Length: 430
Image (cartoon, rainbow, N blue to C red):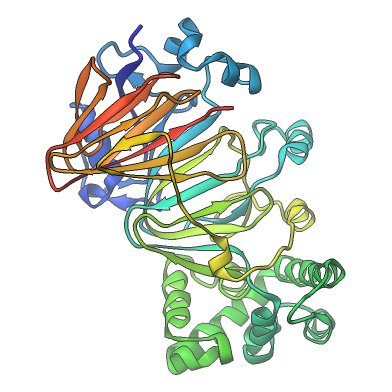
């Protein structure tokens, strides 16, 4: 069995995806599937790379699923990884994706392992497995999203300067928050106080009636159209005003205008920048193309910008209510010591065992060797042309949209043919 082979990966067509050839997902899917025809009226949202049964990747040459290949040859995953995770050797412990985002996804959070088991047992229809779902997003283009709760002083300022926001929660809840939160918490006790007030405020927003949300949103949108960035006091600006109006076009008069814009950090990323979304933290993607890697799970608890099921009770109870400035939500890539050559290699290593991601860049004529990793890898080419090869052996063309599986303990080499060959590789080792 080869330890390096090209994969054919499937695309998901969700409403929020970019349309036709404007979608990287569509172009990447078409790069390896000659039967894939891009429809210029269809949204292409996600490219799935891995062993998930909903959209299983296949060996491009043989059309055998990656799951079946790993099941037949567990050495491709490696004994340590197969033993560590309940999925065994036939399923990867992560799911790797490319996302092309045209309009906002739902505001959501994911349970940790202990809560996932309870939710799955009590409601398997809405929570189809018992695993957690931490996620990491790495920008391929300019990206914007919501990530974690804002610092309490920012939320407090919005409550004091945006009457429409204040009106959606009971006045006693709003007043208790503005009077009681500690703007610059210094101790764990201070943090606990703030979390308690924030939970009550979030619950107030999420349990507001549809009529209350609609009426407040109508007034808010009208005022923002007239006042622009001055509508929201110290932390309001033209960018926030523009964001609110864009979101209202996509989801008119939605609760997300309040629980998203005023409670969550608005984050922007440039290509190569990343955020890690741990369990029980609210987040949403707004626009852009990203690489996403996650633990293998489908568990989602939704809050806004969605017609789907909203589990308000569990959502209010499960969130951590940790607050931090937006810069603290970003991940900083690290150098990777197990590579050599004249290219650039960066490691995105979140604090979980299921996955990490390597970004490798080689310019024309450059080479970069990645030492064998202790577990399996899935690699996608996002820019440029070149080759990927087993050190001293099999060589394959590498072009945008090409996806490869690399077996455990396999040393590989990249060579650039054009301005810059860029790949992202998800891997797991223990």
